[in-house]
Length: 87
Image: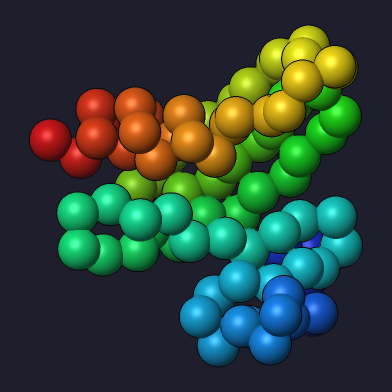
């Protein structure tokens, strides 16, 4: 598992900030309050996503079918899901 989610390729030189890519998984940080919450993300076409938050012991799954519009999964996590579980 560790080798699968490890960041092998930095995103825009930001691997030191926890953002990178490795074996079909993205490392991403979501803002909440004044801190960043680290996540491991796998996305698909149409808004499907698996988002693992190790520090929160939480897994979020989107099974969307938005094939013609812009995916808003990351906005939903930042605006709705994190505030709901952090408060």
